[in-house]
Image 1 (cartoon, rainbow, N blue to C red):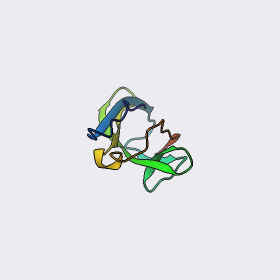
Image 2 (image 1 turned 90 degrees about the vertical axis):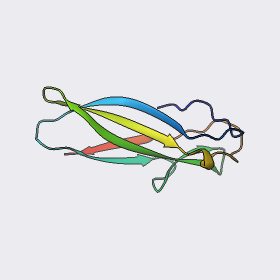
Image 3 (image 1 turned 135 degrees about the vertical axis):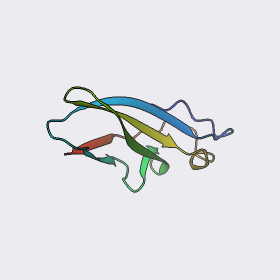
Image 4 (image 1 turned 45 degrees about the vertical axis):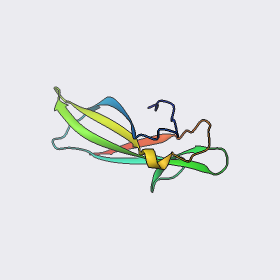
Length: 100
């Protein structure tokens, strides 16, 4: 998931959405756990040695599809969280664990 370039002078909330399909063999909804290389509470993107921008990720059920479940993952960065951030590239490796 890639955010558009952040503009600290505007600092508006940025949102990225992607759709995933989960193959389910049991009934019910899975539980989602998100962990990042740069921290989990909160998730955060890193630039340089010590500059971070926190973000959140949520999973929303969309629809079943013949043994598959369609989900939307939404990642959000609040404008207030990057308005004073140093310029540069920020990244994180997000790991998604799905628990039946």
